[in-house]
Length: 621
Image (tube, rainbow, N blue to C red):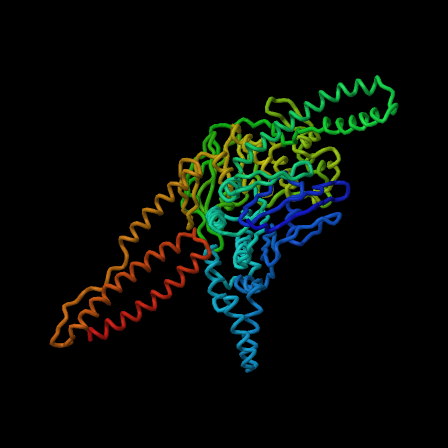
C-alpha cells in the first residue's frame, strides 16, 4: 500500500506551552484517521501544519507523495459575502476554472491552435460538466437557492458550502477539522455515507463518536506531547488505550520499585569512586525520570445541586409562532413533567432554536399560552455562547454570578474551587475571557449555567467545541440529573445517551413526538422510507394505453405494427427505470460518483422517451 504522507519531527509550542514535540507518523493510501485529544492540546494546529497553513517549530515537516491532491476543510471558512452560493463554489474550483477561462478566451481570439489546446484541456479536466457537477453536489447537500448571497447564510448553510467546495476538488487526501459542527443530522449522515464509500484518504478531527465509529479505521491520540496510533474504530481505540495505560502503569510501578533500591545504594555509596559507580548514578537519574511519570488525567468534575422542582414545569396551550413569513409552531400544546428528557431534531431553519427561546421566555408567541411553574429554575445553554464584559477575566465572570456554588450534597464550594474542577487552574483566573480558546469559552459557559443550580436544563448544541473527554463527563452528569432536560443536538451519540424521547420538527410548525432514543427513531424512519420506495416502484408510470389500430385509416404494415408494439414496451421500461432512478437520487445518501451517473442516465432516458413518443405519434396518425 502506497504511502501518501510522511511526517517527521513536527513540533508546536506557544511560549512556554508545548503542544506536541518531535512527532512522526506515516499515512498510507486508504487510511481514514481521526485525531483525538482534549481541547488545547494542538489537534487543529497539527492539521493546519499538514495543510500548509501553519509551520512546524524547529524544522519538522510533512511530505505528501508527489501529485497527491489535498483538500482542507477548516472549522471556519472565510467566504466573499457578496458572492452567490454558486459563484463562491465556482470561484474555488482552482483545478477547473483556468481551463474554462482559457477556452472562453481562445474562442474569442480565433486562434485555431490555441482553441485546439483549450478544448483538450477542457476534456482533460471535465470542464464541460463543471456547472452540472456544482449543482448536483449543492443539491445533495440541500442547498437549492444557488443565487442566495453568502452573507445571508446561516452557520450550517455556510458549512455545507465549504463541504461542497471540498467535495468538488475530487482530492486524494482530505484534511477535515470538525466537519460535523453546525450541520443537521441528515447532512451528517449523508457526509458519513459519502466518506464511507469514498476511496479518499482522510485525516480529521471530530467529536462525533458515531461518525468516528462508522468512518475511521485508525485513531491517533495526542497524549502528553506524544502521538499514539490505534488500528480500528473509536470503540476499539477505547479498549486498546486502556490496555496501553495498564501496561504503562505496570512499567512505572516496576521503575518505582527499582528506584527505591537504587536510592538506598546512592545514599550509602560514595559517588564517582569508580567508572562503574558513575554509570550507575547516571542510570539512576534516568530511572527516576521514568518512575516520576504520572498517568493521571484531568477531567471536568460536575457536582452541583438541583433546585427543588414542583409538579408544574412548563404548560403550553395552543401556541402559534411565525418568523419572517414561516410557520414555526402550529397550535402546539404540551405539558412538561418532572424527569422528562427530550431531544429535538430537524433540518436547519425549522425552528428548533426558536422553540428553545420560547420555552426560556426569551421571546413571546404570536398566540397561545406558555405557563412556567413557580419553582422552575431554567439553565439555558444557547448557541450564542457566554456573555461577558469587555476585558472581564475568568474569575470576574464567575463571581458576577456567585462567590460560592451549592454542591449536590448541600455543602458550599468556592468559585475558585469550582473553576479548578472545570480545568481552570489558578494561573488562568486573571486571564481575559475574550482570549480563551473556543473550547475553553464553551467550558466556562457550561460552568456558569450549572452553578445557578437549575432544575430544568435547556441545551442548544452543547457538543460544539467540547472535546470528547468533557462530553463523556457531561453525559454522565445528565444521566443522573433529577430535573427536566430539553436538548437540541446534532450529535447522535450524545442524544442516545442523554434523552429518551424525541420532538421531530417536520417544518410548517408540525412537531412529532417519538417515544424512544434517536437511533430507534432513525430505524423507524428507514423502515418508513423503504416502504415508501416500494410503493413508488409499484406505482411507476404505466405504459401508454394501447389503442385498437384502425388499419383502414393507418394502413400500417406488418413491420410498422411490430415497431409500434416495441415502442410501447420500451416506453414502459424507460418510464419505470426513470422512476426508480429518481427515487434513488432523492434518498440523500448517494456518493458523488453515483449522483453524476444517475443524472446522466436520467438525461439519456428523457431524450429516448421524447424520441420514441414522437415516433409513436407518427405511427398512430
